[in-house]
Length: 149
Image (cartoon, rainbow, N blue to C red):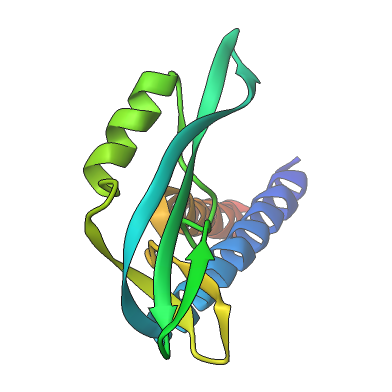
């Protein structure tokens, strides 16, 4: 029985560590992109589906920026998965505080492809959760391994 739990915990640890590492890698790469000024054009909350009989919403933001005096429009907000909200109002309130329409913002742009851009170059809650989950499950698997006669 302990062997089954150890295999499951090691599997969970490897899976979540791989995903967390992948997000860290992407954040690291984006942090080295060129940072240019831009402006938010539109902010919307789009329904993504239902969870616990509640419609979930995700932000949809478009922004404009310039690279070598050429205009571009981007819509990618984050490196990892986007936050979801329980109401359209909550999503729009968050967006208006974080990405005020018409205000100057910083956009991370891939120097090799100016069409690739992102607003938020942080790992986010999902990445932190994946890394924490991998550490906890790895610790539990090691504890089980040590307690097995």
